[in-house]
Image (cartoon, rainbow, N blue to C red; front, top):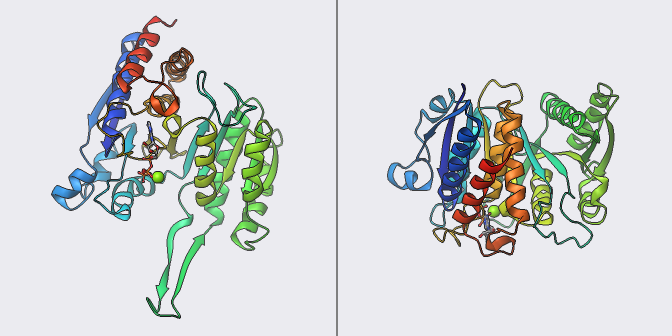
Length: 356
Ligand code: ATP
Ligand code: MG
């Protein structure tokens, strides 16, 4: 038996709805496979936990998660809890505590899903965006001086280290090498930002020497948004800073049809700690409890998790099932359908059982 222990943290809003759907799909994969077993433990951390205990997760949260093979995460954010508490209280401590420095975001237009780009159809926008997930613009350095006064100054310092940039660059080149096109685009803003961004460019060129079989090019982030929109087939693997990739991956998600289908893995490539897999979307309180959350992003990220665990076959089976279902028009309202979360989930489970 190939057994994996998974920590499920459904958290807020539609998180519990999509993670519940995801765990039933994992159970279907177990039944279909026969030799696969997921031991899933649920953690009730998040905004409701915060309202009871004053913290998003207990003080020993990370040490409790450490023993798991992977973390399956829903979404955080609640209308009545400030963003800095929800974000800095749960998701970011896990990403940082487990040094999940590579945030990996695959994109592809799935069958049955319409892209706002007229020229693109199913299979197009087959990209993976690698987001630096441990430093850069979101390292939290900076401050405010003369608060509230006319001479007030606010600084937001982006920190890039040679270690941090080199390791994400190596990860991106390795990933590019593993994909058929072996092509990487390195994104910066080194024309206007003359220090850390120029260092990115230099380190990219150095690391590229280690990967002579990978073709690569450089883009400025502003021009990159244009290229993604007007020349999307010219791209494959993309690496960018924490902030730039955050923005580019929202664009990628929208171009691929909906936030409801976009997955992400927060990866510790060295495998010292569990990696964490989650849909890109947030807690979506506007649709919470209505049973119409799109579970596809949460299924796709389960496929990413399976790949990470070395279960490539189960991962491919899950994605084939998802594509069969979207292709047959069983879609939630965010992607133009009338199906519920449960309709889509049941259909994916059926497709898993009837697949070969
Ligand atoms: P957060 O601050 O947590 O990111 P948000 O409201 O800014 O929350 P989302 O929660 O991602 O962002 O929601 C943005 C929009 O996309 C909402 O209208 C939401 O209903 C929709 N949406 C997000 N995820 C899904 C999903 N899985 N299925 C359907 N609609 C979704
Ligand atoms: Mg948001």
